[in-house]
Length: 492
Image (tube, rainbow, N blue to C red):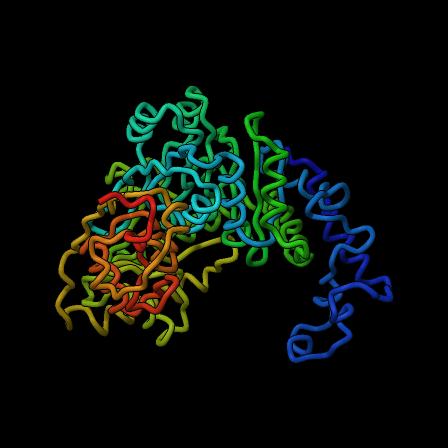
């Protein structure tokens, strides 16, 4: 039975009332509730500006909420089967930084998969924690990294009994999940925290037809991007906590250090109303969405030259479970790379996909995805098939050998070390002083402290050639390395 208290939207209601009561604003922001007309206001109207307030009387303070923000956070926690919730207006990136800063101090170990988001590496730099990386399951046919197995976690825990936490991605960018419940019990039995990155798993909290959520699996703390899959504005996220293992004073301190002192009221209001919508409508609408996705997959499977990935395929790769709101399509038999298809679908059919890899593309589906959207996707792939299938040679099989670059130092040490800037060719066998990643999904190819191999340089050049969004500190042909001659930690 649904809890009628979830009908309330305390922060949004208070914000709306404030915007409508003709306040004379002598505080910030400077647009003064929409009194500086501009092109954006002409397009959106004045109401959005009336809702853009900065903690006036009655609207509470995110850094230490005691009023309507706290009430809205409590409703979020109850809706997600958590004990406590914290609103975030700087994205799940801030949530991940705060969680790891809360769990680990300098030189303490954390067990985690190597295919983590760049924010996790940034958290290692800020905290000074030592990563114990686990190699994820690799799908060599698709060229992607998936979940991590219980056995690999158990091995890492046995070899590192002094680790403070285990970090799990739930789900990966491509929708693959680990056996989170079993891993959580193992970690707790060994007195370790369980931290979950649920940037792509907010929908799990609102449907039994989807994989288990972190809170349902009894994880200690999780960060979820409500904006990615649950309908709030971009950058609005939530931290959820369960049990007594989390030090909430340290967590609050970490959040206050990282978050803006001028949080967006629009983002917080969007969290409030998205929670209400998902709580009351999510289960039914997700069920209908899954039906539509299943129907779409069946249509896509009939199109020559493409292969649609489904749950049966994922389980056959020995992964634990799969979020079926993700549609992965292998396109290489069309003679096109995923990067080419990503651009062609926008150019030819006005369709924006989530990301591309060398042989695949990914579409993210939510309750906001209509049947008309899905039908356009089917028709777009039919068009590509008619144009390219058997007109081009298939792409060669993926040469995907996922290897760990060897770690020489913890990320924080390498980040703060003296640096040199060199060409990619001159960086081989040197120690990385920066992160290099493809975005999306934002998973690092290289992190500070790892030894740069020829294979890593080849990967970087491959993505550069394909026109991918390569993110690093420098221009794409250069990389920052540790200046070993002037580094006290270097040993000849």
